[in-house]
Image 1: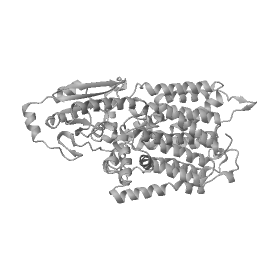
Image 2 (image 1 turned 135 degrees about the vertical axis):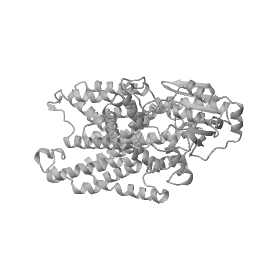
Image 3 (image 1 turned 120 degrees about the vertical axis):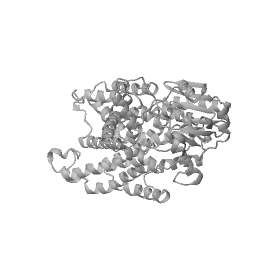
Image 4 (image 1 turned 45 degrees about the vertical axis):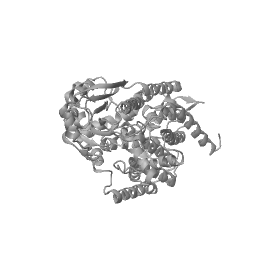
Length: 558
């Protein structure tokens, strides 16, 4: 274990075995939500055609590094969810190894083990670990880049940050935040009182300060990312994803009121979301206690300049992700949350004699959050609610395919993709789909006007809705959520059946999520109208906002 090459390899193997065993019940699940809507189709296009620009879904201009990784595994082994999950878990293990190595460098092995364990068990990180998405991988590569940064290895840091940006374009925030940090160091680092914010106190100022050389290295990741966007523009005619994607994630988010609301949500996601508040609160309370001593020496803290780097990156993600991103998804904060965990665990280690018990309690709380949904709205991809979602949609798809194999089906995304793309794992043959945006009252009424165009409706909970809170009784708050974050209430199956003129023939629910199949009851006029009806091309708009076609995704939130 003392070998400089053997030790990381053994740590990687141990981490991979640990997380694979944790995810063993999940590795054969069909693809979920944004996996099915963008990442798996885009990776499959690379496998089948070699094209880095997806054509079976609208391009969002995400760099193709992770997608190419998946395509390689499918090419070498087999296109199966099990292969996909295993390939992603390998990247997750590598990301956790990067966090372990970073934490070990800035603190010690004990803290590194505890922080890595807490991160692996943190519900959002755990849920994302086996999903074919890119934010977790980008976060892991950032951790490797930060270790190289603290070790003063410019080329290695530039390579790691470049790979991170090619995994997810928003990873460029990390090196750019460090550039700002270095520029501030050039401006203020000569002042004795603020020098330690940029420098290790044990280093001489002249030899330790990196300045302009590091600024150049940290700007290097911009070049390959720019080349990717230039290639994307040459192939598609747009730079930052399809126009609807750009409007949803940038154009529609540039509002001061929305920014303030999103900023509060991002701060919560960075320090309190999914029981993270327990660790943050423990850290704050521990700060009032004196440091513990070992062999007469005070336990050291993380160096001030390291803490400053962590806080700069956390702040960059909090602010930037509040400014952009139509859906305020917690996974976008994965580069920041593990840094909070490292700082918190290090504080507990330094100031609490019973710090292992405190960390164990937090880890237990994280595991509990896998299974128990919070009392506020959240995305199912943030804990094992996504498992419930997939099982529900599997059951609904199996029932539909067995009883209505030739029916035209009314549904919403992502079920529209699940029912038209057998290779997503839900059905064996594609069905014809009439698509609505959601199952709000307005959309269901619009769908009722096109009742002759479908025989069956598959409706489901498009978002998790907890019991109404005090805020939900405040009409202005509901209006703000509706205006800025796409909030709506899905109508219950019985109400939808009544409006569409049908009956519920299948329904199932799990922990606040549900799915139902409604058979439309025909009348002579509707049958006559249906005989002359023809489906429109994918993605075209029908009357009343109903999308009719083969379930082509809007591809806006990935």
